[in-house]
Length: 197
Length: 162
Image 1: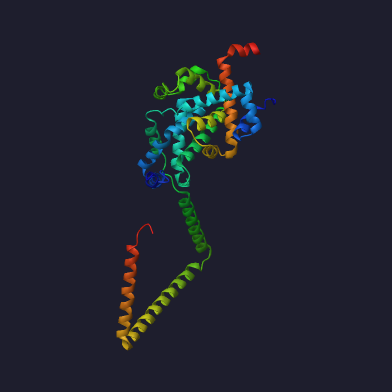
Image 2 (image 1 turned 135 degrees about the vertical axis):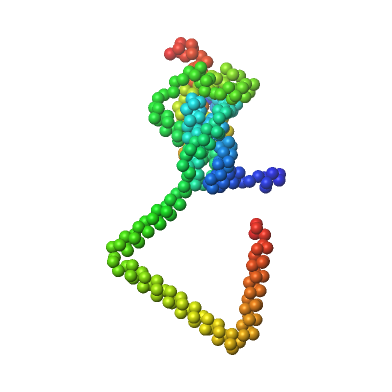
Protein backbone atom coordinates (compact mmCIF):
# COMPACT_ATOMS: atom_id res chain seq x y z
CA UNK A 1 0.00 0.00 0.00
CA UNK A 2 3.02 2.27 0.48
CA UNK A 3 4.15 1.58 -3.07
CA UNK A 4 1.77 4.12 -4.55
CA UNK A 5 3.27 6.97 -2.54
CA UNK A 6 6.81 5.95 -3.53
CA UNK A 7 6.05 5.43 -7.22
CA UNK A 8 6.43 8.67 -9.13
CA UNK A 9 3.19 9.82 -10.70
CA UNK A 10 4.95 10.66 -13.96
CA UNK A 11 7.80 8.11 -14.22
CA UNK A 12 9.03 9.46 -17.57
CA UNK A 13 9.20 13.09 -16.46
CA UNK A 14 12.72 13.09 -15.00
CA UNK A 15 14.16 11.45 -18.11
CA UNK A 16 12.27 13.81 -20.39
CA UNK A 17 13.59 16.86 -18.54
CA UNK A 18 17.14 15.47 -18.56
CA UNK A 19 16.89 14.59 -22.27
CA UNK A 20 15.75 18.12 -23.03
CA UNK A 21 18.92 19.38 -21.38
CA UNK A 22 20.89 17.19 -23.79
CA UNK A 23 21.33 14.05 -21.67
CA UNK A 24 21.43 11.28 -24.28
CA UNK A 25 21.46 8.52 -21.64
CA UNK A 26 18.11 9.79 -20.38
CA UNK A 27 16.70 9.68 -23.88
CA UNK A 28 18.07 6.18 -24.35
CA UNK A 29 16.23 5.14 -21.17
CA UNK A 30 13.03 6.58 -22.63
CA UNK A 31 13.58 4.68 -25.89
CA UNK A 32 14.15 1.41 -24.03
CA UNK A 33 11.01 1.90 -21.96
CA UNK A 34 8.66 2.10 -24.96
CA UNK A 35 10.52 0.58 -27.92
CA UNK A 36 8.71 -2.75 -27.78
CA UNK A 37 5.24 -1.19 -27.98
CA UNK A 38 6.34 1.26 -30.70
CA UNK A 39 8.03 -1.42 -32.79
CA UNK A 40 5.08 -3.78 -32.21
CA UNK A 41 2.55 -1.26 -33.49
CA UNK A 42 4.75 -0.40 -36.48
CA UNK A 43 5.11 -4.09 -37.30
CA UNK A 44 1.34 -4.63 -37.18
CA UNK A 45 0.83 -1.69 -39.51
CA UNK A 46 3.76 -2.16 -41.90
CA UNK A 47 3.88 -6.00 -41.89
CA UNK A 48 7.60 -5.97 -42.60
CA UNK A 49 10.21 -6.12 -39.87
CA UNK A 50 12.71 -3.99 -41.78
CA UNK A 51 10.16 -1.29 -42.58
CA UNK A 52 8.74 -1.39 -39.05
CA UNK A 53 12.21 -0.93 -37.55
CA UNK A 54 12.93 1.94 -39.94
CA UNK A 55 9.68 3.76 -39.14
CA UNK A 56 9.98 3.13 -35.39
CA UNK A 57 13.52 4.57 -35.41
CA UNK A 58 12.29 7.59 -37.33
CA UNK A 59 9.51 8.03 -34.75
CA UNK A 60 12.05 8.12 -31.92
CA UNK A 61 14.20 10.58 -33.83
CA UNK A 62 11.19 12.87 -34.35
CA UNK A 63 10.36 12.53 -30.67
CA UNK A 64 13.90 13.58 -29.74
CA UNK A 65 13.83 16.56 -32.08
CA UNK A 66 10.44 17.75 -30.81
CA UNK A 67 10.90 16.90 -27.15
CA UNK A 68 10.54 20.58 -26.20
CA UNK A 69 6.99 20.52 -27.61
CA UNK A 70 5.98 17.44 -25.62
CA UNK A 71 3.70 18.03 -22.63
CA UNK A 72 5.20 15.83 -19.92
CA UNK A 73 1.82 15.54 -18.18
CA UNK A 74 0.76 13.33 -21.09
CA UNK A 75 2.02 9.71 -21.08
CA UNK A 76 5.26 9.51 -23.05
CA UNK A 77 4.39 6.16 -24.62
CA UNK A 78 1.11 7.49 -26.04
CA UNK A 79 2.92 10.48 -27.52
CA UNK A 80 5.56 8.36 -29.27
CA UNK A 81 2.95 5.82 -30.39
CA UNK A 82 0.94 8.62 -31.99
CA UNK A 83 4.06 9.82 -33.84
CA UNK A 84 4.87 6.27 -34.96
CA UNK A 85 1.27 5.67 -36.07
CA UNK A 86 1.22 8.83 -38.19
CA UNK A 87 4.53 7.91 -39.80
CA UNK A 88 3.24 4.40 -40.57
CA UNK A 89 0.04 5.74 -42.10
CA UNK A 90 2.04 8.22 -44.20
CA UNK A 91 4.26 5.39 -45.37
CA UNK A 92 1.25 3.19 -46.17
CA UNK A 93 -0.41 6.00 -48.07
CA UNK A 94 2.76 6.48 -50.09
CA UNK A 95 2.98 2.82 -50.72
CA UNK A 96 -0.78 2.83 -51.52
CA UNK A 97 -1.16 -0.83 -52.05
CA UNK A 98 -3.52 -3.36 -50.51
CA UNK A 99 -2.01 -5.82 -48.18
CA UNK A 100 -2.45 -9.33 -49.47
CA UNK A 101 0.43 -11.18 -47.91
CA UNK A 102 -0.15 -14.85 -47.26
CA UNK A 103 0.44 -16.89 -44.14
CA UNK A 104 4.02 -17.78 -45.02
CA UNK A 105 5.01 -14.15 -45.54
CA UNK A 106 3.45 -13.13 -42.27
CA UNK A 107 5.31 -15.80 -40.39
CA UNK A 108 8.55 -14.12 -41.47
CA UNK A 109 7.57 -10.80 -39.96
CA UNK A 110 7.79 -11.95 -36.39
CA UNK A 111 11.31 -12.29 -34.98
CA UNK A 112 12.31 -15.70 -33.76
CA UNK A 113 12.68 -14.44 -30.19
CA UNK A 114 9.04 -13.38 -30.14
CA UNK A 115 7.97 -16.65 -31.69
CA UNK A 116 9.72 -18.63 -29.01
CA UNK A 117 8.01 -16.53 -26.34
CA UNK A 118 4.64 -17.23 -27.83
CA UNK A 119 5.15 -20.96 -28.05
CA UNK A 120 3.38 -22.60 -25.21
CA UNK A 121 1.04 -19.67 -24.79
CA UNK A 122 -0.79 -20.34 -28.02
CA UNK A 123 -0.30 -23.05 -30.61
CA UNK A 124 2.05 -21.92 -33.34
CA UNK A 125 -0.30 -22.82 -36.13
CA UNK A 126 -3.27 -21.08 -34.54
CA UNK A 127 -1.20 -17.99 -33.86
CA UNK A 128 0.02 -17.88 -37.43
CA UNK A 129 -3.46 -18.19 -38.86
CA UNK A 130 -4.67 -15.47 -36.51
CA UNK A 131 -1.76 -13.20 -37.43
CA UNK A 132 -2.34 -13.95 -41.11
CA UNK A 133 -6.03 -13.15 -40.86
CA UNK A 134 -5.23 -9.94 -38.99
CA UNK A 135 -2.77 -9.07 -41.70
CA UNK A 136 -5.52 -9.09 -44.34
CA UNK A 137 -7.50 -6.41 -42.49
CA UNK A 138 -7.21 -2.70 -43.16
CA UNK A 139 -4.60 -0.63 -41.31
CA UNK A 140 -7.34 0.94 -39.16
CA UNK A 141 -8.65 -2.46 -38.10
CA UNK A 142 -5.18 -3.89 -37.41
CA UNK A 143 -4.28 -0.86 -35.40
CA UNK A 144 -7.29 -0.92 -33.10
CA UNK A 145 -6.96 -4.69 -32.55
CA UNK A 146 -3.23 -4.42 -31.83
CA UNK A 147 -3.65 -1.58 -29.38
CA UNK A 148 -6.58 -3.12 -27.51
CA UNK A 149 -5.76 -6.82 -27.45
CA UNK A 150 -1.99 -7.01 -27.90
CA UNK A 151 -0.95 -3.90 -25.98
CA UNK A 152 -3.93 -4.07 -23.59
CA UNK A 153 -4.61 -0.37 -23.81
CA UNK A 154 -7.80 1.28 -22.65
CA UNK A 155 -10.28 2.72 -25.12
CA UNK A 156 -9.36 6.19 -23.83
CA UNK A 157 -5.67 5.63 -24.57
CA UNK A 158 -6.46 4.24 -28.02
CA UNK A 159 -8.65 7.25 -28.75
CA UNK A 160 -5.77 9.54 -27.76
CA UNK A 161 -3.31 7.72 -30.02
CA UNK A 162 -5.73 7.64 -32.95
CA UNK A 163 -7.07 11.16 -32.34
CA UNK A 164 -10.70 10.04 -32.37
CA UNK A 165 -13.56 10.21 -29.86
CA UNK A 166 -13.27 7.52 -27.12
CA UNK A 167 -16.91 6.54 -27.67
CA UNK A 168 -16.14 5.25 -31.16
CA UNK A 169 -13.47 2.75 -30.11
CA UNK A 170 -15.75 -0.08 -28.94
CA UNK A 171 -17.69 0.01 -32.22
CA UNK A 172 -14.42 0.03 -34.21
CA UNK A 173 -13.24 -2.92 -32.16
CA UNK A 174 -16.41 -4.86 -32.77
CA UNK A 175 -16.29 -4.23 -36.53
CA UNK A 176 -12.61 -5.20 -36.73
CA UNK A 177 -13.25 -8.35 -34.68
CA UNK A 178 -16.21 -9.33 -36.84
CA UNK A 179 -14.12 -8.91 -40.01
CA UNK A 180 -11.40 -10.99 -38.42
CA UNK A 181 -13.88 -13.69 -37.45
CA UNK A 182 -15.12 -13.87 -41.03
CA UNK A 183 -11.57 -14.09 -42.39
CA UNK A 184 -10.76 -16.84 -39.91
CA UNK A 185 -13.90 -18.75 -40.88
CA UNK A 186 -13.06 -18.37 -44.57
CA UNK A 187 -9.53 -19.58 -43.96
CA UNK A 188 -10.71 -22.58 -41.93
CA UNK A 189 -13.48 -23.61 -44.35
CA UNK A 190 -12.41 -22.58 -47.84
CA UNK A 191 -14.20 -25.54 -49.38
CA UNK A 192 -17.54 -24.83 -47.74
CA UNK A 193 -17.27 -21.18 -48.73
CA UNK A 194 -16.73 -22.16 -52.33
CA UNK A 195 -19.61 -24.60 -52.21
CA UNK A 196 -21.89 -22.01 -50.68
CA UNK A 197 -21.08 -19.51 -53.39
CA UNK B 1 -38.53 -15.34 -30.24
CA UNK B 2 -37.72 -11.97 -31.86
CA UNK B 3 -35.90 -11.81 -35.19
CA UNK B 4 -32.09 -11.71 -34.94
CA UNK B 5 -30.82 -8.13 -34.73
CA UNK B 6 -27.86 -6.78 -36.72
CA UNK B 7 -24.64 -8.06 -35.16
CA UNK B 8 -23.48 -4.59 -34.17
CA UNK B 9 -26.86 -3.92 -32.53
CA UNK B 10 -26.58 -7.27 -30.77
CA UNK B 11 -23.15 -6.53 -29.29
CA UNK B 12 -23.93 -2.93 -28.42
CA UNK B 13 -27.20 -4.07 -26.83
CA UNK B 14 -25.40 -6.66 -24.72
CA UNK B 15 -22.70 -4.16 -23.73
CA UNK B 16 -25.41 -1.69 -22.68
CA UNK B 17 -27.43 -4.37 -20.88
CA UNK B 18 -30.51 -4.16 -23.15
CA UNK B 19 -32.80 -6.78 -21.62
CA UNK B 20 -34.64 -7.70 -24.84
CA UNK B 21 -31.43 -8.20 -26.78
CA UNK B 22 -29.80 -10.15 -23.95
CA UNK B 23 -32.76 -12.50 -23.69
CA UNK B 24 -32.75 -13.05 -27.44
CA UNK B 25 -28.97 -13.56 -27.57
CA UNK B 26 -29.03 -16.32 -24.97
CA UNK B 27 -32.11 -18.05 -26.41
CA UNK B 28 -31.13 -17.86 -30.10
CA UNK B 29 -28.67 -20.58 -31.17
CA UNK B 30 -27.37 -18.55 -34.13
CA UNK B 31 -26.64 -15.42 -32.04
CA UNK B 32 -25.18 -17.54 -29.21
CA UNK B 33 -22.84 -19.18 -31.69
CA UNK B 34 -21.63 -15.84 -33.05
CA UNK B 35 -21.11 -14.54 -29.54
CA UNK B 36 -19.16 -17.65 -28.63
CA UNK B 37 -16.98 -17.17 -31.74
CA UNK B 38 -16.21 -13.60 -30.68
CA UNK B 39 -15.47 -14.69 -27.13
CA UNK B 40 -13.04 -17.33 -28.38
CA UNK B 41 -11.45 -14.88 -30.80
CA UNK B 42 -10.96 -12.34 -28.02
CA UNK B 43 -9.31 -15.02 -25.89
CA UNK B 44 -6.84 -15.78 -28.68
CA UNK B 45 -6.21 -12.12 -29.45
CA UNK B 46 -5.44 -11.35 -25.81
CA UNK B 47 -2.72 -14.03 -25.93
CA UNK B 48 -0.79 -12.23 -28.63
CA UNK B 49 2.20 -10.16 -27.54
CA UNK B 50 4.30 -7.51 -29.19
CA UNK B 51 7.45 -8.97 -30.73
CA UNK B 52 10.81 -7.80 -29.45
CA UNK B 53 12.53 -5.21 -31.64
CA UNK B 54 15.79 -6.24 -33.36
CA UNK B 55 18.81 -6.57 -31.06
CA UNK B 56 20.52 -3.42 -32.33
CA UNK B 57 17.36 -1.31 -32.36
CA UNK B 58 18.27 1.03 -29.48
CA UNK B 59 21.81 1.46 -30.76
CA UNK B 60 20.49 2.42 -34.19
CA UNK B 61 18.06 4.93 -32.70
CA UNK B 62 20.83 6.51 -30.62
CA UNK B 63 23.15 6.62 -33.65
CA UNK B 64 20.48 8.54 -35.56
CA UNK B 65 19.97 10.83 -32.59
CA UNK B 66 23.71 11.48 -32.38
CA UNK B 67 23.92 12.23 -36.10
CA UNK B 68 20.93 14.61 -36.04
CA UNK B 69 21.43 18.31 -35.27
CA UNK B 70 20.78 19.24 -31.65
CA UNK B 71 17.15 20.26 -31.18
CA UNK B 72 16.60 23.93 -30.36
CA UNK B 73 13.53 24.97 -28.43
CA UNK B 74 11.04 26.90 -30.50
CA UNK B 75 10.82 29.60 -27.79
CA UNK B 76 14.56 30.08 -28.03
CA UNK B 77 14.33 30.39 -31.81
CA UNK B 78 11.46 32.86 -31.51
CA UNK B 79 13.40 34.93 -28.93
CA UNK B 80 16.44 35.07 -31.19
CA UNK B 81 14.24 36.09 -34.10
CA UNK B 82 12.66 38.93 -32.13
CA UNK B 83 16.08 40.11 -30.93
CA UNK B 84 17.51 40.04 -34.45
CA UNK B 85 14.49 41.95 -35.79
CA UNK B 86 14.71 44.58 -33.04
CA UNK B 87 18.44 45.11 -33.64
CA UNK B 88 17.86 45.36 -37.38
CA UNK B 89 15.15 47.98 -36.88
CA UNK B 90 17.40 49.94 -34.51
CA UNK B 91 20.31 49.93 -36.98
CA UNK B 92 17.96 50.85 -39.81
CA UNK B 93 16.53 53.74 -37.77
CA UNK B 94 19.99 55.04 -36.91
CA UNK B 95 21.08 54.88 -40.54
CA UNK B 96 17.98 56.53 -42.02
CA UNK B 97 17.83 59.34 -39.45
CA UNK B 98 21.07 61.30 -39.51
CA UNK B 99 20.56 63.08 -36.18
CA UNK B 100 19.61 59.94 -34.27
CA UNK B 101 23.15 59.14 -33.11
CA UNK B 102 23.65 62.66 -31.78
CA UNK B 103 20.27 62.55 -30.03
CA UNK B 104 21.11 59.19 -28.44
CA UNK B 105 24.43 60.64 -27.14
CA UNK B 106 22.66 63.66 -25.64
CA UNK B 107 20.09 61.45 -23.86
CA UNK B 108 22.86 59.22 -22.48
CA UNK B 109 24.87 62.22 -21.18
CA UNK B 110 21.75 63.72 -19.61
CA UNK B 111 21.03 60.42 -17.87
CA UNK B 112 24.56 60.23 -16.47
CA UNK B 113 24.33 63.77 -15.11
CA UNK B 114 20.99 62.97 -13.42
CA UNK B 115 22.49 59.89 -11.75
CA UNK B 116 25.49 61.95 -10.58
CA UNK B 117 23.22 64.66 -9.13
CA UNK B 118 21.15 62.03 -7.32
CA UNK B 119 24.28 60.49 -5.79
CA UNK B 120 25.53 63.90 -4.57
CA UNK B 121 22.11 64.70 -3.05
CA UNK B 122 21.96 61.36 -1.21
CA UNK B 123 25.49 61.83 0.18
CA UNK B 124 24.66 65.34 1.39
CA UNK B 125 21.49 64.06 3.07
CA UNK B 126 23.37 61.27 4.83
CA UNK B 127 26.05 63.72 6.06
CA UNK B 128 23.33 65.98 7.43
CA UNK B 129 21.62 63.10 9.29
CA UNK B 130 24.98 61.87 10.65
CA UNK B 131 25.85 65.37 11.86
CA UNK B 132 22.57 65.93 13.73
CA UNK B 133 21.44 62.42 14.93
CA UNK B 134 24.29 59.96 14.58
CA UNK B 135 23.35 57.63 17.49
CA UNK B 136 19.61 57.16 16.59
CA UNK B 137 20.63 56.68 12.94
CA UNK B 138 23.11 53.93 13.81
CA UNK B 139 20.62 52.27 16.18
CA UNK B 140 17.81 52.22 13.59
CA UNK B 141 20.21 50.92 10.93
CA UNK B 142 21.37 48.10 13.24
CA UNK B 143 17.80 47.09 14.09
CA UNK B 144 16.89 46.98 10.39
CA UNK B 145 20.00 44.94 9.58
CA UNK B 146 19.45 42.38 12.35
CA UNK B 147 15.73 42.02 11.51
CA UNK B 148 16.53 41.45 7.85
CA UNK B 149 19.18 38.84 8.65
CA UNK B 150 16.84 36.97 11.01
CA UNK B 151 14.10 37.02 8.38
CA UNK B 152 16.46 35.62 5.74
CA UNK B 153 17.59 32.88 8.13
CA UNK B 154 13.98 31.84 8.77
CA UNK B 155 13.27 31.75 5.06
CA UNK B 156 16.27 29.55 4.29
CA UNK B 157 15.43 27.22 7.21
CA UNK B 158 11.84 26.65 5.97
CA UNK B 159 11.16 23.07 4.74
CA UNK B 160 11.41 22.53 0.95
CA UNK B 161 8.02 20.89 0.65
CA UNK B 162 6.17 23.85 2.18
